[in-house]
Length: 181
Image (tube, rainbow, N blue to C red; front, side, top):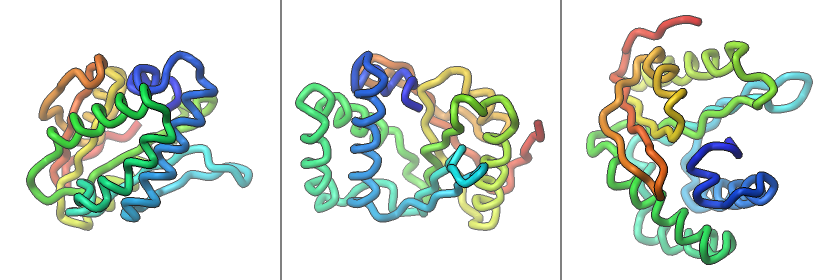
C-alpha cells in the first residue's frame, strides 16, 4: 500500500516516510474508531495480507471521534495532515448512506501479489458480507484494482479526484456472485 497513488500524494515521494506516516494514521484511526475487524493471512509466522471490515453504522466518525483524530493528523505534519484530512473528507462525502459494511484496507505483501492471496482474502470478506445480509462498500485509488473488485461482485458507484488522485467507490450487494481465480 505504501506505493498507492493516494499515499504518494498525501505523504510525499519518500517510501520510508510514507510507511511511517501511514502506520501512524492507521494506528491512530484504529485507536479512535475502535471498530475495525481484520482478517489476516499469515505465512511462516508473519502477516502477508490483511482485509479490514468496519461494521454497519461505525465507518463515519462521530464529532467526538473527529476531535480525537486531530492529534493523529497533526503528528503527520502540516502538509500531510491537511492532505489526509481532505482525503478522508472526500471519502466521507461518497460513503453510502444505506447501512453497509465498509471494506478496507485490503493489502497483500508486494512480493506475494499475483498468487491468489487477495482473492482468498476477498472470498472471506464476501462470505462475511453475505452472512451479514448487508452490502459492502470500498474505495480504491488504483485503476488496476477495479476489475479485481468487480470479480468479487463489487460495482463502481462513483468516482472522484481525491487530493489530485482518481478514486473509485464500489458497492457489492449481499450474496453477489464471486468469480474464482
